Image (cartoon, rainbow over all chains, first blue to last red; front, side, top):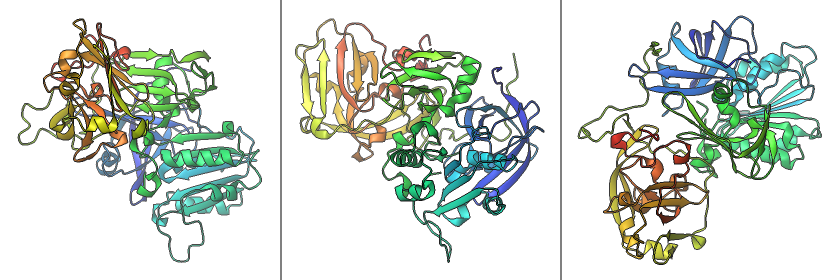
Length: 245
Length: 96
Length: 207
C-alpha cells in the first residue's frame, strides 16, 4: 500500500444534521475508496503558515465516484469545528489525506451479529457501517445503541428510523440522557451495565462490537461488555477524546 | 461531544486517551503502510495485540501505551522539517 | 520550493497580543486564555498520606518531606507567564508553592553537581541545568489560580520553571535529583532541547 499523501479536495455540499452538527461532502480527485469505519485527516493552514490538523470519521458508505462525507459537531471552544461550521462554504478547497485506520473497520466480511454503541458524535463511523450494511446482501443482524443528550441532538434521526423500519435486520435503540420528549418510552439514562445486558441478551459469545464516542463512555461500555462475558478481542473501540471535533 | 454528567468520574488527562487508530495517518506516513492491524508485543508485559488497540496520548509528541500494563510501546515526535524521531524500544517485535 | 496550500478564512484559535503584551510573547507562540491539558499517559493518583518530595543525588544527605511538612514550608504566590512547545503562551498565570531555592537550603550541594533531573509519578522525567532552578526562577506549586492544583494539571504538586518551555515543569513531581552530567529526560531523549529557553526558541536539540 502506498504512503498516503495530502491532497486538495473541494467541498461540494454542506448539510445541517442538527443545530450543532453539519455534514460536509468532498469531491476528492484521487480518492482510492474507503472502508466503513475509516477516517480522514484534515489539515488547515493559515496565511502565516500556522497549521491545525484533525481527524474525522468518514460518514458515507464506500462509493466509487470520489465523494466522501464527514459529519462535524461544532465544539464551542474548538479551533477547527467552528471554522468548519461558520466559515467553510460550498466550493472551498481543503487539504485532506486518507482513508486511514484499518483497525476500526466493518466492511461486511465479518459474518457475526453486530452490536454498535455510539455516544454523541461517535455515531459517525458507525453510520458508515450502517449505510454500507444497507447495500449488501445477507447482512448480519445488527443492533445500534445510540446515546444522545436530547432528541434534537440525535444525528441522522430520520435515516436511522427509515433503515430500522426497512426490516433489514437493523434494530436501533436510543437513549436520551439529559431530557426526553413527551411520551418518550425509551431509555432515559447513560449507557450502563443493565442497558448493555438488555441489548446483548444471550449473544455474548457471538457478537462483534464497535464502540465509538467520548473516551469516558467508550471505556465504561467496553468494561461493562467484558464484564458481561464478551471476549475483549471482539470489542473494538474508537475513543474520541474529550470532544469529537 | 462531552456532557458534564458523563465526565464526572474522569479528569481531563484521562479523557485525552485515544486509541492508536486515531494516529493511523501519522503511522502510515512513517511506515508507508497501514499499521493499526499490525501485531506488536509490549516489551514490558509481553502482551501481544494489534497496534490499533494501543492507547495513544497526543501531546507535544505521540506516546503509544500498552492497553494491559500502560507501559510505553512507542514514542513518535515530528520535527519541524517533517522528519520523525521514533523510539520503539517498548515494542519487542512487530510482525509485518 | 513548493507553495504551501492556504485554507481560505482559517486563522486558528489565536489572539494577537493585546494591551500590555508587547514583548511578552516569545517567538513562534500564540496567546491563549485557556490552560490546555497535554499528557504522555494516564493521570497518576498518589494518596497524600503516601506522597513525599525528595531531594537526592549529589547532596550531603537526601531530604524528604511528607505532604504536611512540604506544604508547611515557607511558600508564596507566583504570577508568571508560561509557554508550551506546542505554541501556546499563557500570561499572568497564578500559582502558590515553595521556591526551589527554599528546598535547596535543606541540603549541601556537592561541588560537582551541575544538572538536575526532576522525576514524577508515572515515570516522567525532565532535565535542566541547576542555575535555571535558582534565584526564584523555579518553584513547586500545589495551588493554581487560588485552588488546589487539579490532577489534570499535575496535582497534587508540580514543578514550575516559567522561563523554560512548559514540558520542563514536571507534573506530578516527586523529587529532584542533582547530578554531574546532563541526563536527557522523557522528551529530551526523543529530540527535544536539553534546556528549552523559549526566548531562544530552543524547542529541539540542535536549535
